[in-house]
Image 1 (cartoon, rainbow, N blue to C red):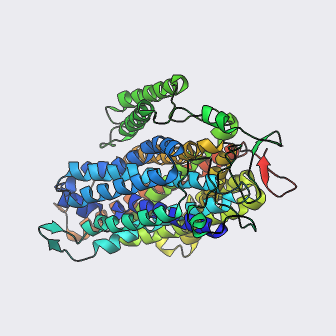
Image 2: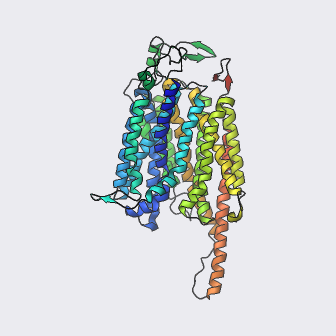
Amino acid sequence: MRGARRVVLGAGGAVVLLAALDAYVVVTILVDLAEDVGIPLNHLERATPIVTGFLLGYVAAMPLLGQLSDRYGRRPLIHACLAAFALGSVLTALAAGEVMVVAGRTVQGVAGGALLPITMALIGDLWDEHERPVALGAVGAAQELGSALGPLYGGLLAGLPATAVAGVELGGWHAIFWINVPLAALAAVAVHFTVPSGTAGRTDVAEDHPTGPSTATAAAEGIRSDAATGQRATGTGGVAARTAGAVSPVPADAMSASKPPVGQVDVVGGALLALALGLLVVGLYNPDPARAVLPPWGLAAIPAGAVAAGVFVWWEIRSPVRLLDLSATRKRPLLATLAVSFLAGAALLVTMVFVQLTAQTLLGLDALDASLVLARFLAALTVGALLGGLLGRRLGERAVAVAGMALGAAGYWLMSRWPLDLANAGLVVDLDLVVAGLGLGLVIAPVSSAVLRVSPAAQHGVASAAVVVARMMGMLIGIAAVSAWGFYRFQSLTAHLDTPLPFGVDAVTYQRRLAEYTAKVQAALHTEYTEMFLVTAFVCLLGAAVALLLPRSRRSQGGSPEPG
């Protein structure tokens, strides 16, 4: 029933929102958290793994757990991820040192990273091609809403007064992680009573139909299996495999034979992917950017990461059990979709970093107020995700994705023209952020819908994971590259400046020199930021060009889009 599917969508969106909130929740509280676990304020670089550990776990776990959901069902994997998410939250809340807090955040990242692709795959199982973009847009909006509210949510909970019970701190920043335990439990109960329990590709929520199931059990489970043909059931009799526009049944034994043996997962592939990403991120991180773009170990770590990535590809080609087995998916639309997702993720990360820094340095705002400036972009991103689903249903994924990346490019080009005196720029900053956010938001649902449309139902989990992995890889590589280049660029612009000292000069002269120095530093920061926004505009233009390779959506006489 459609009502049952809406309940499934609500439960899936809730678990995605819970994980997304914690993805960026430490931005506001990072200084307080670091100080409490023994990291001195003059060595905050040691707090970097608190952020990168979560992101690496988030990315590395997606394909492996998406594969598990294809084989064992969506509901058991969501339950397992919620339990692990609660465990990671407890470890973080109890952390007395940096190792434990990093471990807790990494466990949270692994669990949270799996919830999004599994939920997206569940939508691929239960919604037909015509209605799927709207549902994906709703889940994408939940993800972006969590990203938008994360810093503000963290700041609000961290403001709770310190309260200790039996020697355990419950207030302050600890409250952010303690509250995840009851929230995860509530989400698990909702998932248990709403999400279908069948295996991937063989379950569906029935449409409203005079002769269809009407019992409470059918509404809760929301599935029917066509045992005779192995087809996914709908209210009108099932959706068969489409080949060149013709409909032909797929025998159940053929579907089973096409899947690897249940219980086998590609652990080696997952480890290789995590190793490759970790080496690339470490190789791009430079704690001393005054001398070079890359750190001393960068020239060794980056090639090692590339080699690990090559070994990963080699393994995936030859392994009988593959981490990202998308052999039944057409390669051109798949690669185009992943490339667009990667480029959109890189653009998103540039915004998260440099808008926040712009607000704190050029506008002189504190961290919380700077997050409110960034919230303009993130709110527009959420609206764009919903619009992308609605427009994708009417216009097709390719048109919406191209338009979204082009609109994003226009927004970043406008941001690259921001004046040095941003405080007197009026609504220019807000409008430009809204344009960029709407553009990137429009892309979220179309790329997810496109890859699911060209993938068989039994591989929806892996396909969904691949899209999200590509996006998060763009964010990971983006934050590392942006940090390396941005800090190096600033150092090169200010290398000739001498910091004025209040010795040997009168107070008036010192204040004049300090004002001149501050103005030059501000100008260097402005140049750094606007150049990065201009680079991001070109990244979005490249994304628009790649989006032209997405599959075309054609309307059949019945109104459903078919692969083009």
